[in-house]
Image 1 (spheres, rainbow over the protein chains, first blue to last red):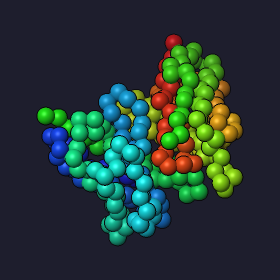
Image 2: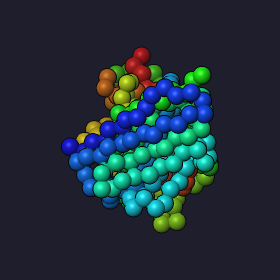
Image 3: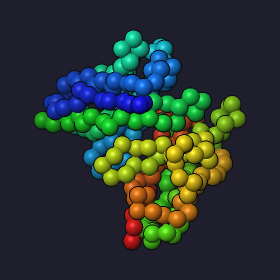
Amino acid sequence: EVQLVESGGGLVQPGGSLRLSCAASGFTFSSFWMHWVRQAPGKGLVWVSRLNSGGSTTQYADSVKGRFIISRDNAKNTLFLQMNSLRAEDTAVYYCARGQKGSDALEIWGQGTMVTVFS
Amino acid sequence: DIVMTQTPLSSPVTLGQPASISCRSSQSLVHSDGNTYLSWLQQRPGQPPRLLIYKISNRVSGVPDRFSGSGAGTDFTLKITRVEAEDVGVYYCMQTTQFPRTFGRGTKVEIE
């Protein structure tokens, strides 16, 4: 079964850091672009970042550029999101998602992990 | 950034009746490769999003054929021919033509 499972969310104070993980299974992880998308409570979806299959090319939303770092370990089938200098507005459920080959439509999603930034 | 504008934001529908959601982009979504990377996702209450349609009109395997997508350039539509109870949720359009990827604000489909 194709699956993505996020972990690493939690409570953190403003200015703090968290590292999210996304464990992939059931497919050849190293062949796909991977994304992070977030959703603040009661709000819509916001794209955060994308990493190519080899881990060499990244894109970020302006709101997280310079603070978040996306990476992957293809040997361990795991995607990461290092989140630094966290702000209250980063509070959200964070989803990892797989980009479809040829279109990059987000075809597989994890269940999400909640990040709460509060003082 | 490409802004995706969905209308309506809320759509009360009677079971068995059709529903239609519009999505308009602030720029053409035609990629330099000639393809248009517009997709539709469904998010049921308490669930992660689920891809329904990609490249305007291609249904994902397992998606009922009552869902269809159409459009071109900057104007796109998702139609549900006969709404069923399991269709309740929020529907998002998303463009993957350009970075940053962007979503519409979502359209809530509910049964009236």
